[in-house]
Amino acid sequence: EVQLLESGGGLVQPGGSLRLSCAASGFTFSNCAMGWVRQAPGKGLEWVSGISASGGSTYYADAVKGRFTISRDNSKNTLYLQMNSLRAEDTAVYYCAKRSIYGDYDYWGQGTLVTVSS
Amino acid sequence: DIQMTQSPSSLSASVGDRVTITCRASQGISSYLAWFQQKPGKAPKSLIYAASSLQSGVPSKFSGSGSGTDFTLTISSLQPEDFATYYCQQYNSYPFTFGGGTKVEIK
Image (cartoon, rainbow over all chains, first blue to last red; front, side, top):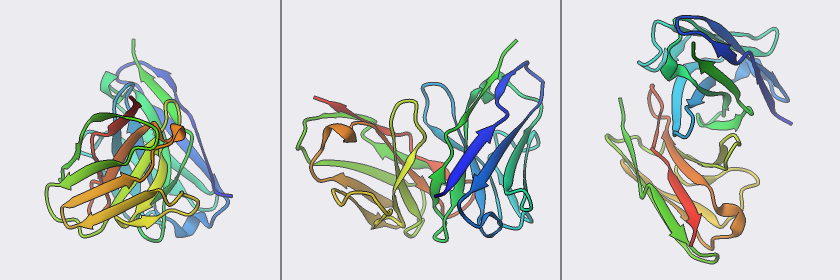
């Protein structure tokens, strides 16, 4: 059974940093591209970042480019999102998602809440 | 970036109704279009990929169609468990983008 378990969310002050983790199991993690999607309170889904299976290619939404870094450790079956220079508008539930062989996001984690506030 | 426009943003329907949601891409995305269902406080659930392919375990009352720029999600006979918010997403090119969502409510 595919499982994605996010952790690392919490309350952080504006300008601060946080690292999210997503522990994967139930599939061959090193074969799958992955991504992060967020959802601000009461709002829709927003794609944040993506990474290839090897980690050699990374992609970002303009809203986070230069502040967030996606990475992965295939030996630990874990996906990361390092978030720096956090702003109030980064407050959201952050979901990790697995890309299928067809390219879509077929499995999602339960999400972790990040709150940026003083 | 490719913009995804969903309509309507919300709708009221009755149990047993046929419901159709549309999604339009600002440029052609072939069939690289997915549909998700999300219930309050829960993660999105994948329903359809490649515009018209049903995810494993998803009931056949859900169907998708379209290619290029215009897509539809149809629920053939709405049931109580189908009241939720639905999103489309293009994965033709980065940045992947979502539609604004369609909230399906009980009439």
